[in-house]
Image (cartoon, rainbow, N blue to C red; front, side, top):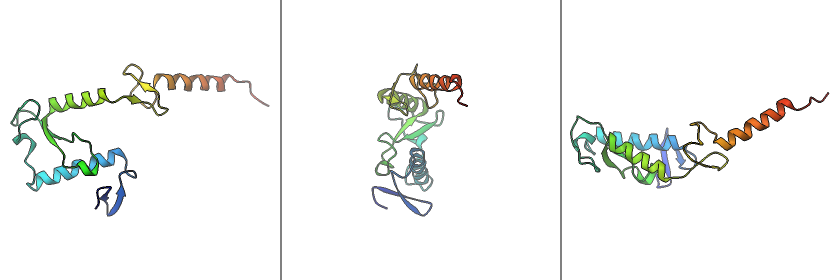
Length: 137
């Protein structure tokens, strides 16, 4: 396996051929295997990188802080669930969101689906024109 590809299900796929979800799944699986094999400590046994909490009274995660690409699979930090949520939120706030057509989104414009406010308006206007257009005979 080289740095530009991953082995999954006996097939070598490049990062471009895999979906983002698949890349995340593989990275998480590799870290979990390392924990099970004793190559990495259990997250609860290591202090949180942000608040220094240690112990089993809070859930701890390994955070892929550089991303899930194959070259960063083991670039991880232990964080508690609360700090992990804050990190994820700050990352999501820092990266500009765009819809499929490239419109820049704010939280108010996104419905949680695939279309921004502008795309929804365009869709419904085009649909309305199609429905109300005179029928050709």
